[in-house]
Image (tube, rainbow, N blue to C red; front, side, top):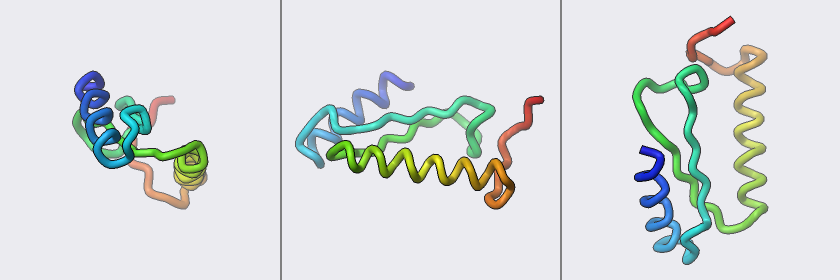
Length: 78
């Protein structure tokens, strides 16, 4: 699935951004994801500033989940 995701990401990044390598592919393992089933996220990025913003958004989301201010229904492994 990751290989298919990379192929698709390159295609749409080339089409929409003009650079086949301007993407981020995100995959979360079972214990870190909220939705059931296999999936990857493709985020089209045009530059490092957008990539930094993406990481800030994810860091904020994960911090809110860690302190209990955002729903987190991923399985608990102690």
